[in-house]
Image (cartoon, rainbow, N blue to C red; front, side, top):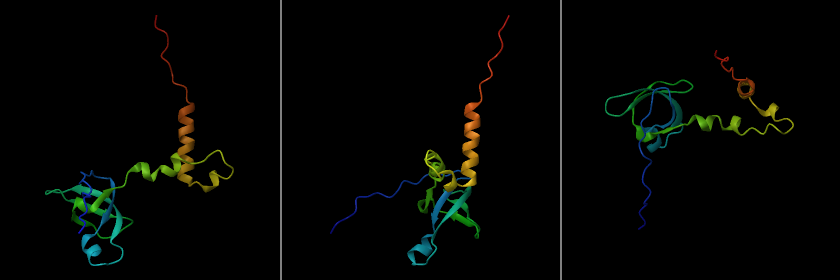
Length: 121
């Protein structure tokens, strides 16, 4: 008999406003569809659980166990912007309006010259 030596993912401490992937354990273990979805952390509770708001809109989840939550890092959500192939024809056509706006803002910020203080007497 082979016993898995893989340890479960470490329980992370979550902060209000973070986005997490939540798996409803009752729905999962009973084989129901739709058991995993994105939520926003609303607050931490006594006992190490969290109140969540499922997105886009479902009934709030009260006292969710962090063992069934995984952080959705911002870097993953922004990867398409960070790796956009801007040097190819049609690249801008494949980007969302938000990505284009962000790139324009970054370009404008990068091209601003820093104001140096005037000479002192």
